[in-house]
Length: 269
Image 1 (spheres, one colour):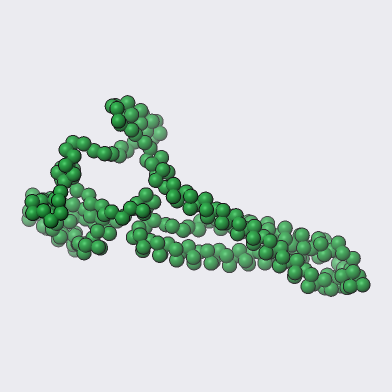
Image 2: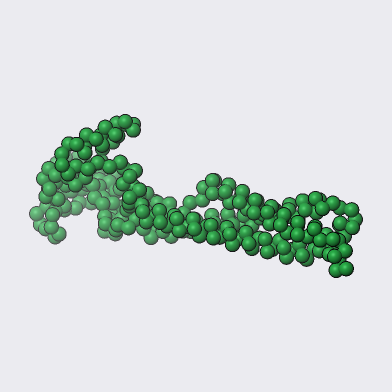
C-alpha cells in the first residue's frame, strides 16, 4: 500500500511521466518494485528511450497456456506499445467482449466477413486448443485410475477369500448351531464393505496430501496460481461408491463360495 502511494505521489509531481505494469515474475527476477523508474526502448541498452514508472505489479493468471512459456509480461499504454513494437496501427490479435451467445455469433460473422485475413474464434475454443497437453495428461490419469481400480478390486477379492478361508471352522460352527446361510453371507458382506470403506478413507487422505504437495511444488516451480491437482466432492463420491460396490461384490463372491460347502466338509470331514 505504501509503495502504491509513493508511485501516486511521483505521478502527481510529474504528470507527464508515463507508467507501465509488469509481471510479478519479472519483478522478482529483476528486483523491481512499484515506483522504480525504467527505460523502455526497442533495442537493449539503448540510451534513447522512454522513461517510465512501474505503477503496478500484475499477478499471473491461472492459464494453462502460459505454463510452457517463460517470457515476461509488460502492460503499457497503446502508443507506447506501438512505438516499441514498430507496428504502427497494426495488431496481431485483439479480444472483444460480447453479451450473450447471439451477440457472440454476430460478432464472429461480422469480423470474419470484414476483410480477407480476419479470423475470429471463441475464447473457449482457443483455450481448448492451447490445452491439448493437459487433455492428454488427463486421459493418461484416467487410464491409470482405471488400472488402479481393477487392481484394487482383485486385491480386495483375494483378501476376502483368504480371510474367509481362515474362518472355515467358525462358519461351520455357526452353520451347525442353526445360523442360516443368509445371516453368514450378510456378516461377511458387511465386513467386506467396512474394509472397503476404511481403505477408501485412507486412499482419500493419501490423495489429498499428495495433491496438496503437487500443487505446492509445481505452483512454486512455475510461479503460477494454476491448480495442477484437484480433489472434488464428485471424485470423493465416486471413490466411496466404487469402494462400497466393489467391497460388497467381493464379500458376496467369497461368502457364497464358503456357505455352499457343507459344514462337516468345512471341518475337514
